[in-house]
Length: 98
Figure 1 (cartoon, helix red, strand yellow):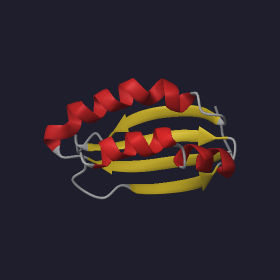
Figure 2 (tube, one colour; figure 1 turned 135 degrees about the horizontal axis):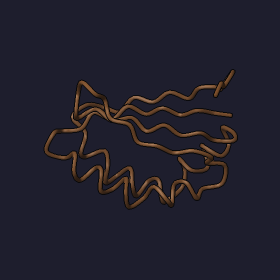
Figure 3 (cartoon, one colour; figure 1 turned 120 degrees about the vertical axis):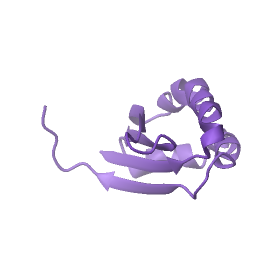
């Protein structure tokens, strides 16, 4: 299982636009092959800092999504909303407890 975290620091005036884009695209993202989990998180101390947290069955599934026309279209609309360059981490899930 691959866990993907992406930190997005938005210009404050663009928060509503970003949340709208996420709302409109989340089901399509979740519909990509291999996407098992998707959520949007907001930093409690910095209201313009968001994280996307997703789980993918494999690196190949994530790469397929990231190379898709859908992703390119959404990313083009999203990245202009940033105050800082996005940061991303791909992590391997070692252990999960419930």
